[in-house]
Image (cartoon, rainbow, N blue to C red):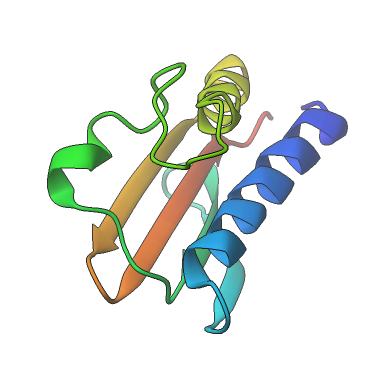
Length: 109
């Protein structure tokens, strides 16, 4: 596992979460070991504006953005890094209540 790349994923997801919350809210970063699956799950949760369900399927697509100043590459890079580490990113969101990005990575033995 490349620590610098995983750090980039975490920083990008946290920055997006903070931007989604605007002037306030809660950002939670939590890790869980899933021994039966041989995986680690890193969850980044925010209490921001949430993502409309119809937009979730486009998350991670290069150049897709809803930000006025965004390039649409941040999440795309995150998905690519996690994929190269044989993991996956799952997104759960409810408008007005927040979003959770779950980064699931296998444990190499």
